[in-house]
Length: 144
Image 1 (spheres, one colour):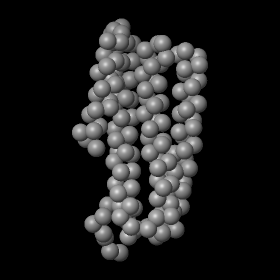
Image 2 (tube, rainbow, N blue to C red; image 1 turned 135 degrees about the vertical axis):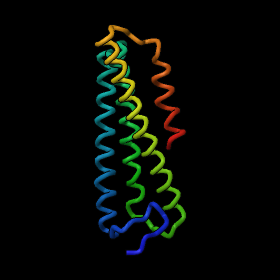
Image 3 (tube, rainbow, N blue to C red; image 1 turned 90 degrees about the vertical axis):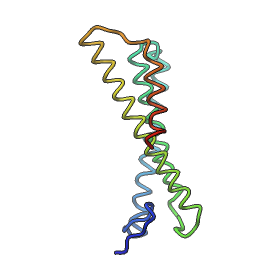
């Protein structure tokens, strides 16, 4: 099969692409709804006052962004590859998905670091919350 230089095109047939987009988008929207439920439950139970739960809430918000970005692929369901809107939408969706994956990875690393330092060294690093948030949101902009 002929390889195209466009990274948004691949060797799948049109029906396979539509099936994949439908599954990914549907699962993304279902995951986003689950994240909204988890966030609202955390806020209703006032668990956000505790620092570890607040870090977990940031993780859930990162998951929500990732789920919404996976839901964005539904806009490409009935696509026309020759239309310039398709290429722009595909590139924006790819950037947002890559950015959200890095956000989730960095929030997971910071949460693990915080819990490890709290359990092993008995140090509560609440004062580093601004570092956790800023590095998890800004560093992926450089990478993605």
